[in-house]
Length: 355
Image 1 (spheres, rainbow, N blue to C red):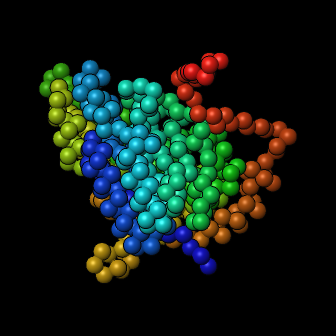
Image 2: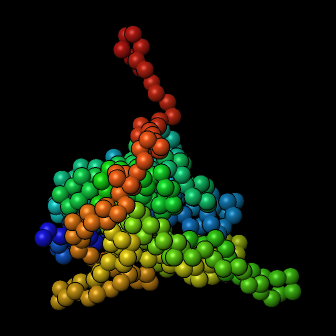
Image 3: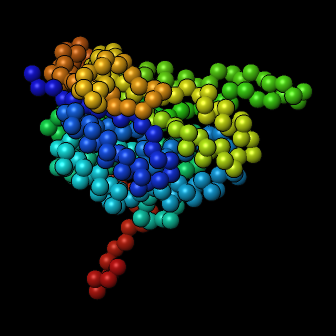
């Protein structure tokens, strides 16, 4: 029986430093590869930050942070991605990584993107998040359908969606219809929708309504996709370190409120799911002894979580619910997906050959 070993890297970036974050990523790629990982996964916009400040600070206070975000975002064909491609080729592994992507057409147009890099160093999937969610619209532009693709690799057919896209049934269906066997869902470190408490006019505090439980919501969405697709799921979330917290708090007009929100919000988890949507046994590997230590998920600390996938388990469930085959009514439903890359302008050549 041939197994695919997947490594979910539950990490914080070097906040708003693309070069340092790439160096950290390549170091963890080497570690995961030494531990026989075939597929190595990183969180949403791991390079080089998730703009959580837009959820908590008013836009009028975020100009400097947005400028830093632009400066530390990267091109999909730039030197940072080339370093990752080299690492994939050197380690013979497939890498999935989230980036804040610069566009060549603008000084400040950014996309929330994810790259799947093949074991030969080729970019197999370049996906831009279809629609930034909630406060993300203050940083990223909407993507397109170009990246709704499943990569055919020696370690399985791999697809992925970014955070809230895993709520989009049509995007998910488009991947299921491409024989997806491993589904990667990438997530931010936290997802605050409400402040944990606020001050009242008499100097006291007002208890806020419950914050959005992103841990529960993310697991429900990922598990639903695994059950419907009969595929394995890799949930990979980021982590906020003290450097990130201090950067976001600094310059805020309400530093205590922001700090409390950052530290009190539920942290994302990294874990694995089987083709029924149930948790898949996973483990950490001791750096000194090489011993496997059973671990259900990672949440509060950095590390690499591993799982071994038997892709033949994707078959049995299709007998019951093959939603793109025997359990679909192709005479009733039809889905059309435009996978063209959208550009702001298309130049045509003149008769003398000049553009």
